[in-house]
Amino acid sequence: MISHDELTSLVASALMPQAPDLVLVSAGDVARAILDQHGVVKLPEPSHIDERGTSWHAESGRVLVTVANADVWCGDDLLDADDAIEESSAMLAAARMARLRCPSRGALVTDYTLALPYTKPPLSMNDRKHHYARARLTRQIRSTTAWLAKQQKVPTGLEQAAVCLHYRPRDRRVRDADNLMPVLKAACDGLVDHGLVPDDTPQFMSKAMPVIHPAEKGSEGSLWLTISIGDSP
Image 1: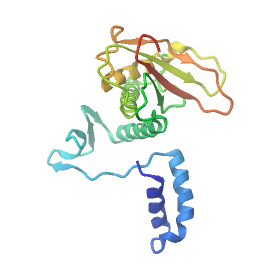
Image 2 (image 1 turned 45 degrees about the horizontal axis):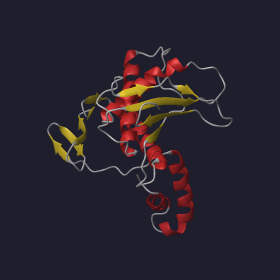
Image 3 (image 1 turned 180 degrees about the vertical axis):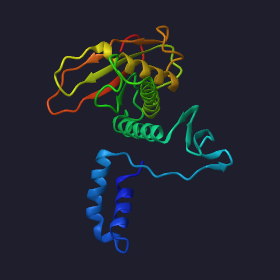
Image 4 (image 1 turned 30 degrees about the horizontal axis):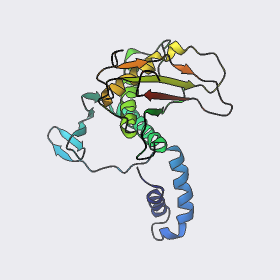
């Protein structure tokens, strides 16, 4: 992620290329406003280009993403350009949230909280969405949860964990906790992808009924997961 100082320098150079030092204060204010709302990253150079497409690799050599003509391959998923933008935006939001909430280094943590980048449930049992749209949202929740778990340094290879989904709506309208189950299922699949436990079956993962918390005046809605290393969330 780009730091405030780095973004300030970029903004100042754009505002006054000949004398960026003269507008550093204004550029700093602009940079702060941008970072309050968005995650900003430097675009990396491609790692490999051949007749099959252009690829970006992780430091380990693993292929992160490949562009072949107008198609984008991310892992085993084929995405179109809009899907790729939507998924990457969610990943950036999740990564920034995870960094803001990560536990102190060296602390012994047995309970983890993953703040999901949604103000309301992206999926519901009562949805009338087309199955392609539901599949895309399910994939996004799943990959975002796996990314968050990695950023939070949630452990892997456990024999048992307990997971609970929490939702604080923005208003006091009555909600049904059952409607949150599609989000919980997709998030638990993401935790399995991360390697928390081998599967999300009861043998390895306990799933509590989602909890709906009272609305707080003036606050946007929020969703988060709690993960406990033990028998109950």
